[in-house]
Length: 186
Image (tube, rainbow, N blue to C red; front, top):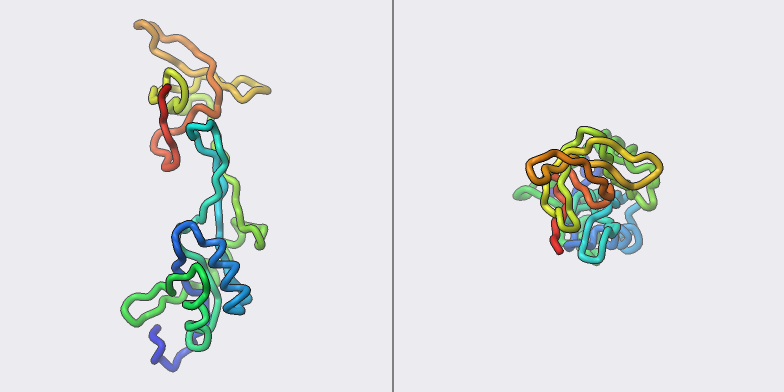
């Protein structure tokens, strides 16, 4: 939809933000651009770092938030909001995001104000995992059993030509192919 069209221009648009500033841009769109509906879904996850396990909060769509506004009347105010780099467009067309899609996303993030969903890894017996900490960092193995009441699991190791079971912290494991993982050695 271009600005020259005489058609309906109110709807949900994808707004580009400065890196790592999505929640600030969303707040500024509400406060300074006077938009009633701005949606910035975020996730909270735990990651191994040099300091140990640390919780991180990131935007589900890095560099983007969703805002409902009248393109013709509010575009200038949206573009001027602090933290915003512009509204997503293709040539002179500004794609409108369907209400159904936004509603479906909002159902996954029930706390509208925070819109943060906690991503907790679940590891089960039989899962392939990679050790991320200690002398076995980088080793790919299989979980043989969960140890109840603790944050520990038993994994199968190939030790001196024999398979042995070792007990490790569940926090020192990740699944192969996980995007957010950092393997570190001693």
